[in-house]
Length: 254
Length: 104
Image 1: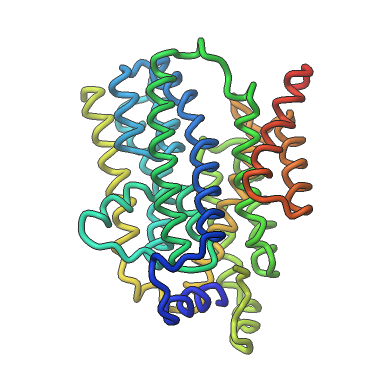
Image 2: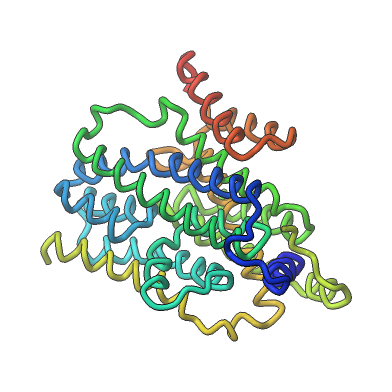
């Protein structure tokens, strides 16, 4: 795995946190805060939906502050708003949050925080912070990308949740500003540099098939979870294993 | 079960799930196959998120609207090696422009 080797190589060469070159640092910060703003702006729709589903402004804001994982939050207020039980709302939100546990496995490989900082890192472990963190070429850039994206999304997500809860739907549709398309563009931009191997391309194809097959009938958030099995299928595929064994790795492009 | 209790219980479980991922012993990830799976995981999840974010209809199911054109513009920007922020702005601007012109 070239990526991992590269990260460890960067560490072994004695890079310190301050050693991140300015160009890389600027690039990481730009990614982190543009993802943070694009994603956080969706907090408006969550805030409005939360209040519309019968939660108070305080309860809606508590979800963004304490649950802090958009898919689970939308699912939670969706079940409550549709008249579902508390247990159903908790179960749906928790099931959708399982992927954050998978993200934790990934990011703890490059985050080396201990104590309370580890708890904060766990709280910030979501789609966006994980994606930006993993997409970076070195350990230090990954750490910066994870923390900055997590903080940026947290700040904007909570501000816009409060705004949305206050103003409700009167403020208008984020779609009008193309923010839904901005999120799609951000995800594809994060995906792009990771598609440079046959395994990655195969994983993407299987993920598309799984998502398209499941999305029409599964509740929001579930298709993404099921698409994770694309990585399991391709990663455990015997042919891929054989190819990996007679090479020095490098099937994962940085 | 009060609504506040439900909200806080769901939040607590969300945090425990996140924390569990951070505390799984890294030895569990040492196998080559396991490492390959975890390395491919973001490809699978991001691909799925692109599909959902582009095609998911608000009422469930799939729909084709201005987002697909925004995504296409973003991909063209990526092919032209545009920086990340430009890709995101182009995706949003194209979709917003189409909607301003009346195409959903």
